[in-house]
Image (cartoon, rainbow, N blue to C red; front, side, top):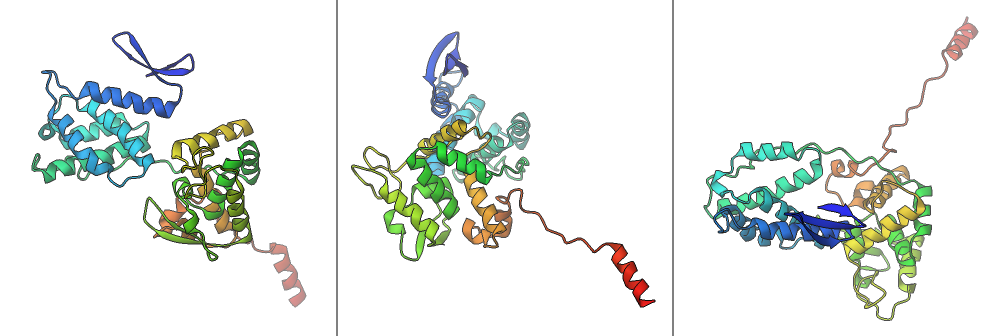
Amino acid sequence: MVLKHGAYWYIKANKWTRLSDDLRTALVMHADIVAKKSKLGGDGKQSGMARLIDAAMPGILKGKSPNTVEQYTIVQGKLLSVFADAEPEDIQPVHIKRLLREWSDTPNMANRRLSVMRQIFEHALAEEMIDANPCAGIKRLEEAKRTRYVTDDEYRRIWVAGTPDLRVMLDLMYLTGQRIEDVLAMSHADVTEAGVCVVQDKTDAKVLISMTPDLREALDAAAALPRKVRGETLLCTIRGGRKYNYKTAYDMYKLAAEKAGVDDTTPHDIRAKAITDAKRQGLDPQALGGHSTMAMTLRYIRQYDTVIAQPPRRIRQAWKALDNAA
């Protein structure tokens, strides 16, 4: 896949197929093309691994969020390409390790592929297609901890550059400290006098965000957004009142950040900022994040997770005390 003339193209046998001018859409389309071309082995029949992947993926994707489904679908296309002519029983741990080494320049993506492969082979194990899962015992690659902290000034610049909908979205993300997917799913029924109740999509953790004047103001701003049709969610599209999807919200944020001149940031950084700022203000960051352990919360704490030490007094003060005693 190459980028040319403002669009992404798939090239095969010198034939150019236009995908999209949007990278995420292009990746999904590219994965679909690769998947279709990879399902058939050299003899014109679908390979065993291709059949296994197709059979296992529906169960793996069941109940997953739209964003996870999109990511796993891209992984599916990649795995169909890698294992195009392979049979499940031929895959050994050494092959999985070799793949991880080849993908080591993008550890996050490599670990996602490993997770999907492990689930695919678990399906094969349950169906008695193999005797052992070749992914068993394979360690994930170490992922660099993200340290990006969006400053108050950067937040303000992105907020000013954003649309009215994004401004409300940003404030709800920050004031609740929740993932963007959970903020987009917040409904009117989730709001009470006590606060906003959130059932996190990723962990099923249930968190009640206590009502504060700032949160009340953000909720009122959401209700005041002009809509011909207002849907069930606090944030809904201008036309139709439908729930915002992840990609639209993500693109809105990135566009505002670009206009504001704020680099290297994604909507996920706002959750990290909220949790970090909560800790700075003496609040409970673990409760806000909805994490079962503090270790999970610490992954979100940014540059302000520093112990503040009080230095001793100058030694000359001790000398003076000694002189007075003498």
